[in-house]
Every structure is written in structure tokens, then in C-alpha cells.
Amino acid sequence: MAEARISPYLPPNIDPTKAPVAFGKRALPKLNEELRAPELVTRQRALMALSDLLHDPENVYQAVQLGFMETLKNLLYDQDCTVRQKTTEIFYIMAGHNIGRDGILGSDIIVAMSPLLEDPVDICRRNTHQSYEMLSELPVGAVALVDAGLVSQLVRKLESELDEIQEVILDTLHFCLQADATQALSAGAVMILKKKLSHPIVSIRRKAACALMEICVPLEGKESVCKAEVIPLLVQLLDDSDAEVRANVAGALMYITITTQGKYAALHSGAIPKLLALVKDSHSKVRLNCLKALTTLSETPEGRKILLQDVSLIQGCMEDHSEAVRRAASIAVRVIQWKP
Image (cartoon, rainbow, N blue to C red):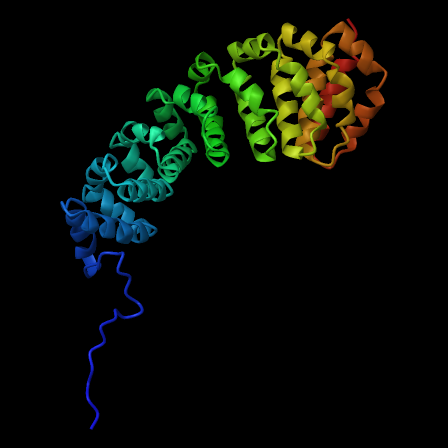
């Protein structure tokens, strides 16, 4: 006769690392209670379950309303590295939703997370930097990072962090520098970014050039770049194999050469021949930035004299398929052919 047996194994669809989620509206309140539990395993399992639920914007909204921010903020300082890892991961997930970003910005989470920039566990630091990068994509988030005084710390981290984390930091700095470049300049960002321009990893060179372009927008940035003798390296990088590097470098030269000091530093570094060679580049962003840089260089008598010999090359860009390139070429020709 057949006999019923109870298996000692868990059902295949049950994950023992996650807390069982309560039904309906009770799910998140129950997890919030478990996150405050004194037992380490209970906190870990609750965080595992919560990280899955928060991919749904409705759950993010409910979590903010239920006061999860304060609970999670306390878990940032937990002695267990797994708890810190999952907590920072949850903040990164929440930062991907508007309501989550608002909750983070309204709960002083940015400052609370800053000690984790020194965490001994790589993934905790990476999650923290990714959270900051996600927040910085909004102007209000970038301003919050600047107001928290974190830009100088991010700049210094470029010298010691892992390459994959450096890429995230450079993305964050790109947005923060648009808000305010003062902190970065005070932290010596120009010299650090100068070193990153020669990095063997293409993506780091690309993002370093982009950050340097942003830092060259204010006058103080232009002066710092000239003082640090970055321009010869920028001119050299116009030959880089990556189109984004070439475009960002040309963009940096475009901003730097607005000043008289920048104009002559670029002229003495041989910028004009290299920029002229790129006005027929296959990438429109490269062509556009090169034409704008050539326009500012042609404002000097020496630059205009050189460019008058090759003005036909720039005139050819007036038939470009990109409207922005056509307009930039037209302005460049007009400035080059100007007569007092």
C-alpha cells in the first residue's frame, strides 16, 4: 500500500536566503520590522527580499511613505558587510526611480552614505558611488552632492580607486562640475584628470576628457588648465583612436581657447593642423567641436593667417548633413575672412 512521505527538502521555488514576504499591503511593513531585528540572519534575509520588491516603483513609493529611509540609514553602519552591501544596493535601486531619489534627497542619505566611500569591501564602495552617480543625473542631485562637500572627496578617490569605480566617479563628476567646479578645482582636479587622460582604458580617457571639458567652462578652470600645461596633451589626444575622446578633447580646447592665454598656448602646441585634419571626421560631434575651436583660434592674427590658407577645407563643411556643423562652419568662415 502506498505511503505518504514528507520530504526534508525545501520546495524548489523557495529561496532560503530571502525572508518570506507577507501578503498584500502587509509585505513591506513586515520587512521594515525585520530590518530592525537583532538577529543578523533576519536582517540579511529581509534585505534580500526588499531588494527584489523595490524594482517596482509602487513599492518604492510605499517604502518611502513607511519610513524605510531611516531604517536603511541605520543599516549603513552595520558591522556585517553583507548588510552594508545590500543596503547600498537598495539605495542604488531606489535612486533609479523619481520617488526614490526624492526620498533619498529628503532624508540626508547622501551624507549618511559618505563614510562608505572608505569601506574595505569593494562592492559596498561601488554601490555607494553608483547611487551618487544616479542622483547626480538630476540637477538637484548634483547640487546636493556639491552642497554636501563630497566633490573634493570624489576627486581624491580617482587616485586610489579600482578602475571600474573610477569610471563611475568620473560620470558623477561630469554632472557635479556642471553645477559647480569650485570644489573640484580646489581639490586639484586638473592635475588628477591630466593623469587620467593617458590611462590605457579608453572609457576612462573618454570620461576624464569629458570632465576636463566641464571644468574648463568657468574662467578659473581655463586658467588652471593653462597653468598645469594640459593643452599639449589635449592636442596630442586629438589623434586618439576613440571618437568620444577626440570630441571631448576638441570640446575642452574649444572652451580653453576663449581666453587669450589659451589661444596662444594652443597655437604653440600645434593645435590648428590637427583640428583641421578632423573637420572631415566621420563623427559629427568631433567635426562640430573642432570647427568651434578653430573659430576661437582664428580670432588671433597668427591663427587667422594660418587658417586663411585652408579656408576652403572649412567651407566644404558648409554642405555637411548636420545642421549644427553647417552653422559652425559658416561662422568659422566668416570669422576667418573678417577684415578690419
